[in-house]
Image (cartoon, rainbow, N blue to C red; front, side, top):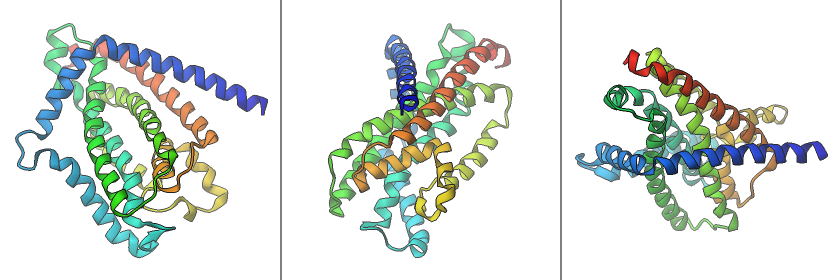
Length: 278
């Protein structure tokens, strides 16, 4: 018990330090980041026929397709919750995560003029991607709230833990985004590799199926999948009305710190060569 408390305290201090450094970096470049997020968001949606509706249509179409297929296997309800609503709660953070990683692949190349011709802090580019994805995520979350009301799904106080899970998702995505964006400058196969990894990762994460179908003796392996903590966390907050599991968070926090620090180190080591390669 004493060892567990020390681990929680150490991880808490480490996460606080990482969060503080990230916040300072965001604040120092806040105007540039906001301007680029606004431009990226407009480039993504403005000019298309549906515009912002695509941020709603995309997740709803995925929910409709997966519900049509997998509700035949797992039933129309999971417990007392309609399968489509149960699915949407976990699918929404996954969509944000996968969009961040896919957009990170070529973000350095898309802004090569800034990197090669101006003194530009390239490490803020993944922050721009995450900022744009958060806007789309919030729109999708608003749709989810409407669906919860339509289906009369009761919301408890643990629904207020959603911002916590969202922050956790941002930190985990940030580390991977730094790794992917920097490696892609030197290895052009990163995009193809990411497509394969994301497809496999999606099915390894209990999003379209309940974690209870996994034999209990192997269920502990889910903790090695950081996205399990996020997707299941959304369900715990919105469907099951349960709090944050401490042990699962410890696993997630450790892996997030590892990826975040590794991603920052790799990016800093490689960015000095970006201008030469580009």
